Image 1 (cartoon, each protein chain N blue to C red):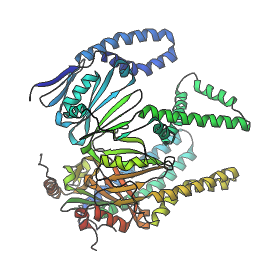
Image 2 (cartoon, rainbow over the protein chains, first blue to last red; image 1 turned 90 degrees about the horizontal axis):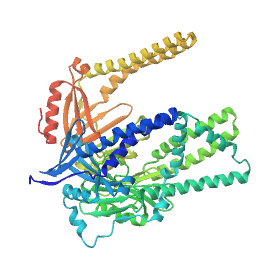
Image 3 (cartoon, rainbow over the protein chains, first blue to last red; image 1 turned 45 degrees about the vertical axis):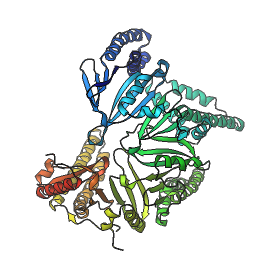
Image 4 (spheres, rainbow over the protein chains, first blue to last red; image 1 turned 30 degrees about the vertical axis):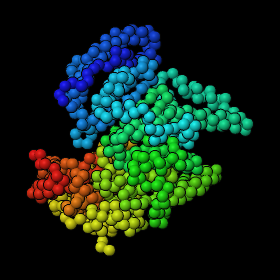
Length: 477
Length: 163
């Protein structure tokens, strides 16, 4: 099969997308020029940028071609120096189709082809903007069988689909979405130091001047801020994960999501090493969790392996089994770690608040001591819960590990997929008779650990998980 | 002790190599202390210079016996063994690690010898898996032992010899 199966250019409107990228690159310098030199310099600067940028964008569109055939994908590009990138089709691991906002207005999509490079790394080839039909053709040419699945008249129901209500609930119970406004404020204040003109400082000062001092005013402001944070968290979740749908396409899972920028992500089943079920202290009472796949060869792109942003506990076993038929029940009990692990959690949680308490007492700051005392009480609860969440289980095929309290994670993984096993002990752990087992999963899938296993537990677990490997190393009997 | 220790030790010469490395670190710290004191003198504060010199000097003096001790203990606690199904490596004396890399997961086995290693007539063997953290290395073996090790690991991993 040496004939060319597919050949093409980016969509003509891609020029706009490429040009926009130039604009994006020159945005910061332009802003700096504008703020420091004013409008007299900015107009010629913009004209110059257009004069150079637009022909450059047109030229780079003209020079960019893709070609699928002879068992490989070729990308020809380059304005000044030409380059040809060639990837054998069997190296293609997946295709991401995204629709950034500008693309959606133009009816285009961005296609990213992910391929295995040498040494277990991965390379990514990007086609900045093609039409939807082109993207479908590419997907078919590169991944083959996808068309058959699409043409089936009755599409099977998705493995998972997020309702807006569930997403909003997920947003207001997600620590990252709740903390996002604080992070944005932090960035704003950081920028404030660099920007001339002291805009942010002045705004903050005027806000501080008008800050109410009476009780009613404080309650009103507090409620308004809380409401704003909740609305922002819900909106953030809805924006990113709108209509999140996970479909089973046989050898692949296909996830699509997003309100303005719609992302389509392919995930090869053969690359999945396990599944993480995560929740937060806020989600636990509502029995909500997020599910991510632990996948090899997927680079750390955000959400590349997300299977469900928010899911109710009732739907969890079904989803896990659809991804991994051997997945154990996510509610199955886990073996607890020894009491020494509890003491170690307490020591870790209490160190900082106790130090704060000592300092406050030494300085005679009584309100500080009261705050520190409250922190000590919270730390005790946190330490206790961190210990209670520690657990592991092996059912003969899948290893289950759990840790964390504020952010809790339960992992189910196939130990046969591990690239190495490591047992680590610190001096403190040896004194307490515990050890940490780390399972390295390889190819960017990271590692998972069982924290503070008892010594006999660790020996038994290693002997169960890989008897042929660890049998000779364990004491007889 | 959960797992028994691996059988083989490194070449004893590696102790002197690590001693040199540790002393180089101590020398670098001494250099920093000297520079700090010099800056303080130039800035016109002799008291600060004395303070930096005294504290820094004490740290450097403490680093020297630590360098000797660490080299010996690192050597004593580094052991390795080629088992039927995997490479078993134990290392570290404060933070101990026992790692098993199954042969089937090994992608490449190679040797390196930097200038310092070469000065002591030693080579390092690196075992890489398809992971940034899952691999391991065995620093400080005589060249003939290293060659045999590489050959055996490559054979067990089913890797064609490339060089």
